[in-house]
Amino acid sequence: MAKSLTVIVPCYNEEAVLHESYRRLSGVLAGLEGPSEIIFVNDGSTDATGSILAGLAAADRRVKVLSFSRNFGHQKAVTAGINHCTTDLAVIIDADLQDPPELIPDLVRTLEDNHAQGVYCVRKTRKGESRFKLWTAKIFYRFLNFFSEVRLPVDAGDFRLIDRSIIRVFNQMHEQGKYVRGLIAWTGFHQVPFYYEREARFAGETKYPLSKMVRLATTSMLYFSKKPLMIATALGFVSVAFALLYGLWAVLGHWLGFTHADAGWTSLVVLIVFFGGVQLLTIGIMGAYIGNLFDEMKRRPEYVIEEKLNF
Ligand code: UDP
Ligand code: MG
Image (cartoon, rainbow, N blue to C red):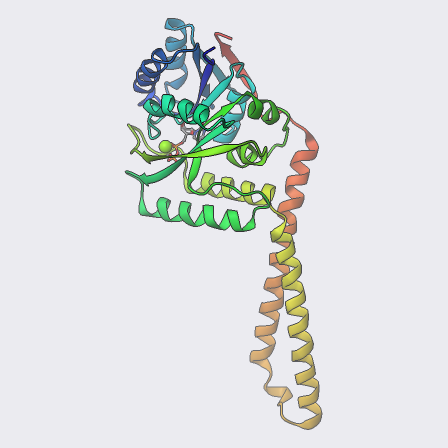
């Protein structure tokens, strides 16, 4: 029997693209064998996104809408979509049509041909994005993989197809700091890549300013690795070894007369700056983990839904 499918679309201030996204998505879904629906997650948009989605939901029963009470962020929007999905399969896709909806049938076919539980889309090329974004993204994925304790696919965003076995495990994860694509990889189910060309944004501008990119990068790093903590320890060892050697040199120099104690200003400044830096860095790394513990401990809901349509 043909499998049922949900398309999950996080939307933050996407008034410029939503009509076109819906048109192209519903065209693709009409061609699928099984039943399908779309869950738009309105992530606290401040433009006309909410009213456009309400209009789409009123005209089409298969359009479901979850509206957050404020902006909770892309990863929370995707999480809410997965949490509310009841079908066999789910596709996560951006609203801006950078990920072509026309690939969905190919993703389903790839999943079935490979007897896989997930298909993740790997960008061969990315059009219409700044050199800075391409460059930072490239470094980010390599860097994260080096640190991570789970193998994470490189150059793959959240555009992907997952089946019920992954959805079920995902719904058991209640951490606040969610790096969705990392958690999906973590489940360990058989997942295969699908290579595609990433288009330019259909309209509007990116909703991922540098601050959100940095937040995503830190979340993924801190939630998928304890290596930064080990690096802090390693730095401590290195600086202690260095200090011992330097101290020995200074004491011996004093006794044997090859250092000039009163000419030591430069070395003092260098030492203070160096050890001050090492200490602040390691305290900062620990602070980042403690901050996350603090957030996790409070067990607040991950997102707040203000309105549901067609559920
Ligand atoms: N998005 C969201 N909440 C946010 C930021 C972005 O739901 O706080 C959505 C956005 O509407 C889009 C997707 O996440 O559907 C990816 O955002 P965008 O296309 O702006 O990021 P980029 O492709 O530039 O990295
Ligand atoms: Mg985009």
